[in-house]
Image 1 (cartoon, rainbow, N blue to C red):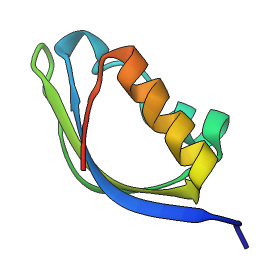
Image 2 (cartoon, rainbow, N blue to C red; image 1 turned 90 degrees about the horizontal axis):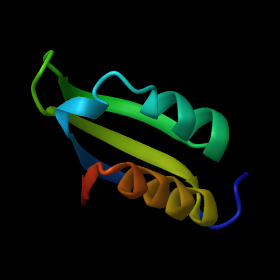
Image 3 (tube, rainbow, N blue to C red; image 1 turned 90 degrees about the vertical axis):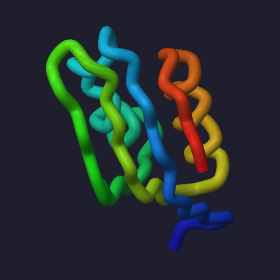
Length: 77
């Protein structure tokens, strides 16, 4: 069982220059987070929107969100 587990639904808005980056992969691989994709709308040469549930330790969750923001992805609760 994960100590201090956090699970939240988030809306991610990707600028069009980031839609081909493996962002979800990095959240799983680098931050040991579990992802449940609830909705996605990604089109070539357009902003992408991803609604997901992100679960893991509080520290990994916070670091994963920081990673997203550093890339330039807008994170909304």
